[in-house]
Image 1 (cartoon, one colour):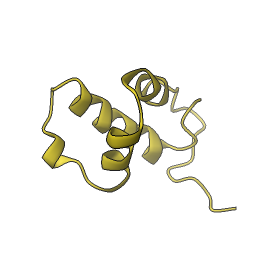
Image 2 (cartoon, helix red, strand yellow):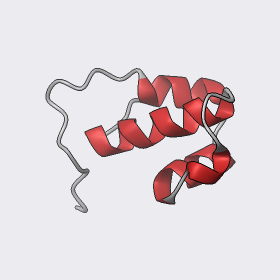
Image 3 (spheres, one colour):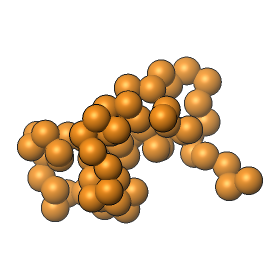
Length: 62
């Protein structure tokens, strides 16, 4: 499942970094913390590796 926005992709990257032990879990906030708790490393890799070109900064609420 690809990321729908740049913000979602960045949050997945932060959560993935924590899953791999590269950053502290306590540094995560908001969406990245939720992703860390609820997603597997493989899922986070898919979100974080989505090409950014053409993605909105934030996903629209509609």
